[in-house]
Length: 438
Image (spheres, rainbow, N blue to C red):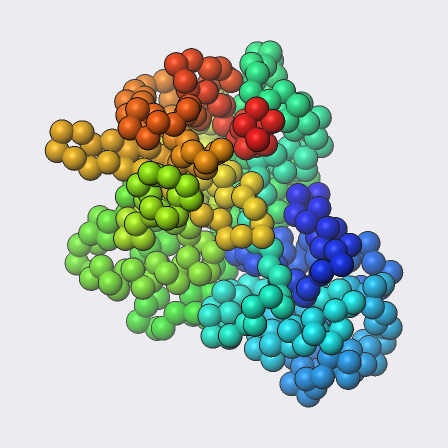
């Protein structure tokens, strides 16, 4: 399956300022697969896996000098390492602080060698290590976006049509077809193994079985990064966070009998593991949005919509009859979809940051689901899962922040009225990449 991040890897390969690169992201998002796929563009591909072979770990324990280390790896694997022609891929690098530390020396002493690394739960190890600034590059990976799903489904034509179309209305048959793809993507999510299974079998039940297995893996990971007494809190958050999507998180709503600090610490662990992401409040008084953010006020969302629905034991059958994302659990499904899409299309060179706006006042309590930066202005985004719901909060934002326009993301086709662009769920990539807004 083609992934968009492959273009970033090709750019890195050809860059004269290239540095050792680490792929960061949650388990099962496809880091190892994309590295192997990328390796096909080299004459020689060498993979060291620190999770499967202890001998590979010992290579880095034995030697620190990169030139001697390369010689050792070459002799051990039986493959020549030729700078410029070889990709050295180190998988599950989080299992070796020595290997992570060695990356700086590859940059300093062998910058011509392509060195790529990846790992699950890598963020926990990176917290412990002082990485030198400017000697290592990072790319963040997330589940497949809806547009990547179209490409994987061999409907690149639809994706290209959407990008070329911008935000103009589409013919109803095309609109209906794209909504059906949205429905399918909503059910199976963006994890590559699940997507591939669906494309091969068209069996949603089989996809759910794989999702369940992946969820078990995530739960087993709790033991790797949490203290024994924290595991029960991780489990509680893991199962309740999906129900909190789209609302300001209050730990008292999760369990009033557990100290907020205890749940907060557990939440940070899930965020580091990449399975939960935060959307921070911003006063949105200017750009950048994070300058006006309040780290104590945030919403959360699960990292993959398919896993989220599986975790909630969601009955997908109503979606088979109606492709619209309808009001389910107060619209959390629609907000999860949009949050995940904005994350997927974010700059992979930076950790994704999403923001929302909330005005709490006795006379006026308003909230805008997302705020994005455009042309030095904060732009409000409302997410509507169905036909009801006013645009009062968005209009309040437009008035008080002097934003030139806003967006409504919903099941409805592209349109424009009263300074608000209507964007269908399938059009988020078009919104973010349309020349009209860039």
